[in-house]
Length: 107
Image (cartoon, rainbow, N blue to C red; front, side):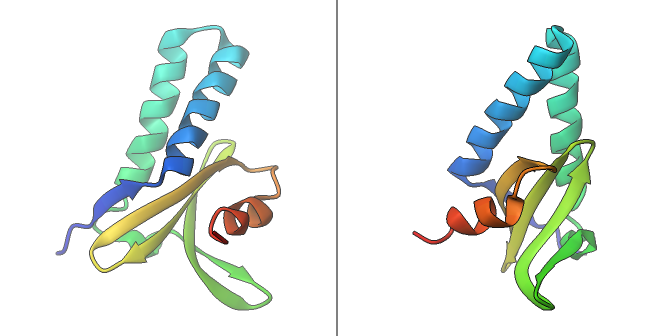
C-alpha cells in the first residue's frame, strides 16, 4: 500500500496558529490546546494510506479537486497530487470556507 507524504501550505500553517489561539482562548489551558492541535494533526495524518477516504468537496455538482475531513469544529481541506496530500486550509466549519478556500488559490 502506498503511503502519501503530507505538505502544509503556508495558509494552513497560519490557520493552525489561529486554531491554537482560538482553543487556548476558550480553554485557558495550554495542555488542552496542545492536545487539540495534536489530535487534529493526527486525524489529517491518519489519511496518508488512503487519502481518498476524506469527503470529496463538490460545488454545483462538480468535484472541486479537494477533499476534507472534519475535526470537531474545524475542516481540513486537502488535494491529492501524485503521492502527496497537499493541505491548503484548516478552517472553522462555520466560515464561508468555499470563498476562503478558492480565494487562496486564485493567485
